[in-house]
Length: 133
Image 1 (cartoon, rainbow, N blue to C red):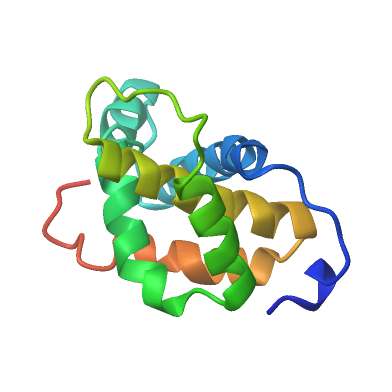
Image 2 (cartoon, helix red, strand yellow; image 1 turned 180 degrees about the vertical axis):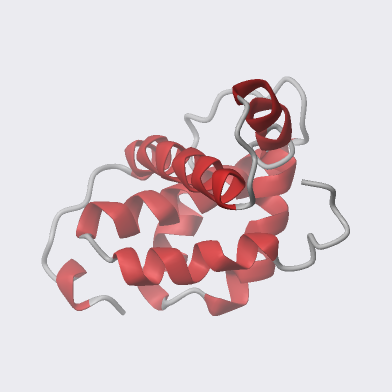
């Protein structure tokens, strides 16, 4: 459990997901640049393989066993939110998992736990070695 969270008020789970979406997008952009991509068209093309609900859900399923108690709580609150939009290009299950994933990232960003956030984000490349990036 994160010490900072005890007694602290967090934004709503969906607000955290909104913030986490930006954190995740920035992480992917940085990762691709670090891999040597330079042209914006190429960066955009490759980022599309990471910023989908399906991919975020896959990452979340991979890291879910690693979640701490408060991360798991935020994940479930976001995933089970009744105010989610109906997804157009993905299953509702993947959309809910992706929303939960984004909420966890948003919470970690909100409380300033960059070390833990980076620890979880480091798992994005796990199993993606065959994926041409």
